[in-house]
Image (tube, rainbow, N blue to C red; front, side, top):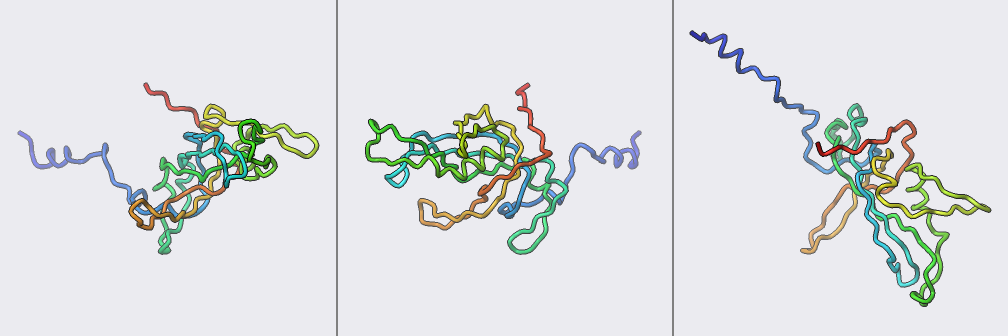
Length: 192
């Protein structure tokens, strides 16, 4: 016959737990996070301010396990473990790659190819090789296969915006990228 001790021993579980360090439901705090590129979207041939032609790159990052030991401060001053954000996805603002417009197709646009500082920072932080000649850096187009899994340190800020109903909203966004010197490229997870 089963006694009370045996029944209580059977209720002890190691296959489920609660970790209060990972219990954070609010807006991701501002700060620098180690992350990996998880996707890249490109909008081609966008006319900017009616003057210039640009491709706009938006990068999605997954916050890396390496943040687990870090601590971040919320807007109300509370400290929260970086482990609460591991695996979260955060999106960049657009990185503009200004390019020379085809005058036959875009006669009204002027050239602005030298105004690519943020795109150069994107390329640098992800370790993409660029060609340099006579003080100019020739910036390649990127596609997702060029950057998937690349490590980077992302600076997260709070971006205020208004939704369709006129309500003020705030989202965590990536504003700047930095090279993660000792970061390792993340291999793509296989679906099996």
